Image (tube, rainbow, N blue to C red):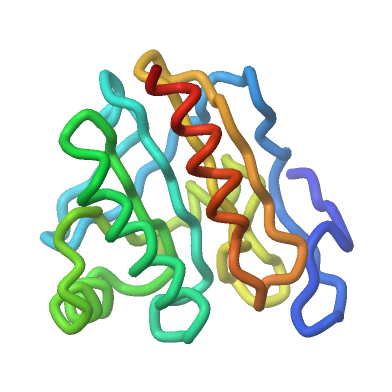
Length: 172
């Protein structure tokens, strides 16, 4: 499996990403993640709707909390035509607890803890930490990748305005 050193940093220290990078125009790679109710979710389960995939290292950290709350508030505005997923390595039980405490009901949290298939297949698994690199992807209804944002410094928030602008173009 491909390893890419230095594409992201944690507090300025270079980290290694495992997996090939996903690029705009690619077919969305498959994945098997676990929902809060312990059911498996795959890429094919989200076909038919535009899907924003917000990737965070852990919901129990301040920046990940902010990012997920922001996308939850955006999901409320976007309505049923757009899926918003948050993927992390947190256990489904921790994700469910976080959603309850945060009142996050408009998006879905999914855990990649079992096999890191999302992280590996989407090229965002951080080798040194076994966490996922902060990133945002948008896939269209047919499963094509239409937007990619890999956040260089793991402790920084994504550029929300860029994501929302790209989403507005795709939903027109």
